[in-house]
Length: 280
Image: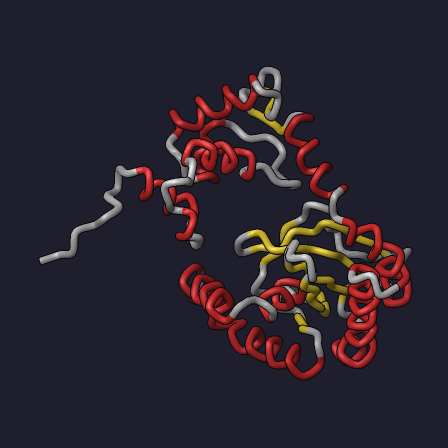
């Protein structure tokens, strides 16, 4: 006999779990499914996808289209979305943007780290970014570029994969073991072919972090792009961040990345930690 499912498909708990994805702990009685769905609608918009129809939002958020229609109407009435004239599509409105900017303004780490990041970016001839985890991605919350005419076209709000990037691997390296294993298993299940190609590189990056304090990604995310990553776990419990420094491979070779830029990025993070912890 099959076990009785305590969360049948139509229940609020089951809906919460489907929204939570790899965060089943959210599927409890206090979890407000309607609010979660509204936030999923807002999450459908990205720096590179600024306008979406109800049908496109439904596909990206994995929600029923009638539900999305009610949510976009409500969010538009509240000022979080605006409708593009004659296009039938929506885009984020000032009320939604103000939340993001308010969150960024509260991150004191950005103001502390920025001058150090800019200095390293100029030295390396590449770019230096600060990010934090969002599900299976890392999101840039600060970014500095060198004066080099050839730099990576990323900015604040850009999302990069955890598994394939130096920043993402740095975040994974300091997560609790159970959470780290869950992320790796999810990556393997999501794209087995891709995982088979980079599994060894991910494992080497985690070993490299334990030995030297930084992770590497040498062409694993994009061909010809090399980067190093260093994590920072805030002492006040506000979260896990990571810094990266990267550039096209003809500007930063794997050897320079490992022998020069990596140790410099570790020192940068130590300086930021000192300020955050009040030691300076």
